[in-house]
Image 1 (cartoon, rainbow, N blue to C red):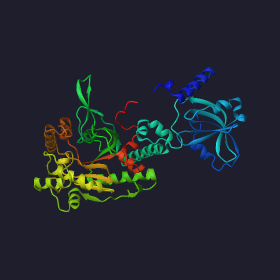
Image 2: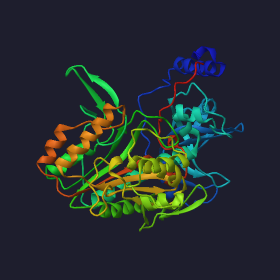
Image 3: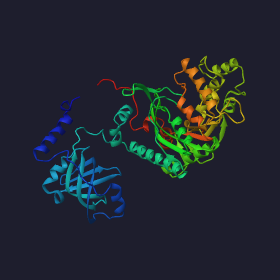
Image 4: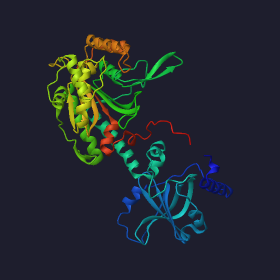
Length: 493
């Protein structure tokens, strides 16, 4: 729809023309407010009805409410901290009162005036002058019902933020969560680093990458699926504690818990094992909850979720055995494991070994019932190509995943630092890839070269920041916590 075809837009365009005809620019260069809504409320708490302060302020924000009762016009603007009532009358504005009443909801406005309270005790700015900062050509969604349509909320997040307090609160809680994660890591002596988003070889996780082409180099490149192999190179180089909070990209399906572009905290600590990393994870989770809620005892989807450490540790094989009512091991005949998988509703792939089959049974039968918080530990080698072999349980690795509120939130392990064994694992992955597994890894010779120079015993961690924010904001869709989630193309208008 073009601007001129909408009567509401046409009426606002006419106001733009009228302003310019009067010598007023509806999109001026700037305006400098000197106080926020939150600061005004804090500075003048307890001011009685009908009182003046003698204090002149400059405020600015989006006009979200207007009430015209003839000789008096009340407007409410919202800045980034709250709302401010603008009180307009002839005593303050003189012959500009009519221009004030012509403002539309959605307009960005700056105003100057004395801080007062109305006779009803409402803190206000008695407007002596105002400035149009940006004329809104389209109206905001209907004020009483807000913006309810999910597709519109996600596609036009600016409208969602403009009219839905819940959307603004989620954005603020996300900021508090990330700040808490960073503060905990730095306090523990970790160095924050940045590793390549564009990589010549995708690695660090089992996932399908996005592929692009670098014209100058003449090579295919990949949006990273994980920063792991680069971060561990830094530990090889002598940075014993490193972390990164940044984006990963995986060319996979969309769901309430998956977005192709997502945020991870990933860290590596020399001389640590997966037990130490689990303790770090507990600290990160509890501290983030306290930063957002003031307590580690939160509620998610109507159920209590206590993120206070420590969390229980559940063996993966033991949890599968308990779910199906009989012990499970990786030494069981393939036919027997296949039968158990079929009974659990798992659709088998002929290329799967026992570790993959058992893990699929876990994901089908155990994972949906995990409320947590709880660590599931000791995953099979087959599904953990970068994790260290378990020190006492053949066929397993020292790997954990953290589940909370029914969500997988974190993954970590004692890192595999034997270059010969890592090559063997890479070669097994390459064979699986040659047989059609698009998520299997390739052989990263440069990373193997780094390992050959010596990686000390190291513990690694990845925390899904988006899913953690879901928990702390009590929402069930990842699209609620990503400001601009990826969506299917909108149908033609």
